[in-house]
Length: 117
Length: 117
Image (cartoon, rainbow over the protein chains, first blue to last red):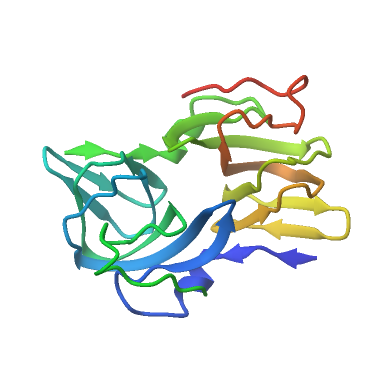
């Protein structure tokens, strides 16, 4: 009997913020977990929507015209081309799904490389 | 301040088993919640991997050579072409992600149509 991928267990293996780790692949998408705190850069992805699911904590996704606030078990998909800035007051754990090759900052020159865990 | 999509809230709106409801779109993928109990049909998807994340309860994904057992916060991606039979002894709530147009039974003649919630 095999176990699946335990997200809390994967999250216990690293401590860096804003540094997603790939835990699975779904076709040409990467399924990632990340720890986040404070604010990320404003950015957008012209080629893809951006999926966020909060596992623990509280994430605010700032959009130019409003904020979306997510608690555990809540998700939001930022449409492609829409500028957003994720923010978390306290350490927050999230699940992210994006096509492979998507730079996390929206810009390949500043993005962190894909890291498996 | 907007709220995101609360998965537990969406799941409270219906009671049918094995009848996924689409709660969001991610590019050409549908993000769905489902309530499941007992066993589903053996099936496979030749064109796509199949993503399962357990939100509540316990899901066994029977494969021909082994079982994968998932609790809350655990996920598994069944590779394309691999036969599988989901099974839950008690009512279990799951998040599913599949490309649009994927029949839930692997066969468009027996699949339930996409339902939004």
